[in-house]
Length: 371
Ligand code: GRF
Image 1 (tube, rainbow, N blue to C red):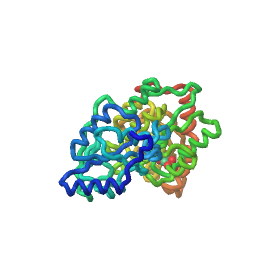
Image 2: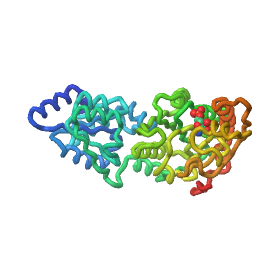
Image 3: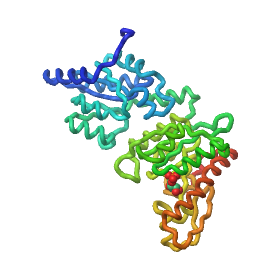
Image 4: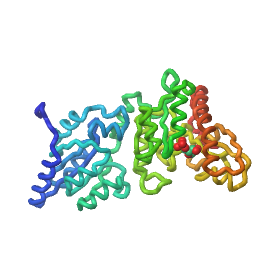
């Protein structure tokens, strides 16, 4: 491999594709970060290559790896990753791309076969990528993951093997904050950390809303602002999204997951892996008014008092053990908006306070998620 290796251009790969087509042959396309190559990657790439007559690997740039996997990745810079990848016998060309998704490349290259590894199904592929593939008439092939081989697992092993990290030595809590909306609770956590009322650091924030005030808040505070496409149902997470969120949390080695207005329901594997370590803030005095529209429900029911609750998250919606509550009066003439705004004022005090007390007392015993 010459030291002055340069990745292929999109134009050259497109022309390779056209030449193959004239010969009745097929170009296979796959994409990924390929940060720390292991035997699982090599076997996957061999299988993918066997689906056609030549294969191009679209490699995420360093910038897009950071967006996808968090600030500590990639371990190896894009030029090195491209050079190593191009040296594999299954790989005919490598292109580097700067987006989180490969949609533009798929549109430009129009590969004959698209290979994807892992637990995906055709349905759980990213929507934009999938429509680009369908528009190009590309055959989609999902290949099984090679069991026991994963970059995240290797990295965790290097960090001492623990996926359930203990708080760092000086007692600073490593948080992941998940949200979908205006991000006021995130701002309250950031402010409490800055004011030294909460000894914590935000390892990552994660949102299912690419353009949200929540994400803007994280960016403005210089905190990793990761986006996960949750899938079509606005209240549920696709299997692919659940898996992506789990991987982000594992990679960031967080102590506590904070749901601050995250509008989709978390399921496995996150719930079990973080049992007793996921908190949610909810705008009612639970167990009253679970689910959406809690301030409106309190008004409709003629309540004189409502409030907010910080609780542990279990598979039952808004049903985990209550950690703290604060009361808020319902005023005559209150609308859902005015009431919710006053509830949020209390949330902004309660959530950081609970997190800090939790830190001081130590993390709850694992398995303490039940009410
Ligand atoms: C809060 O009222 C919280 O109780 C609920 O969602 C809202 C999030 O607000 N789960 P924000 O995005 O933190 O401003």
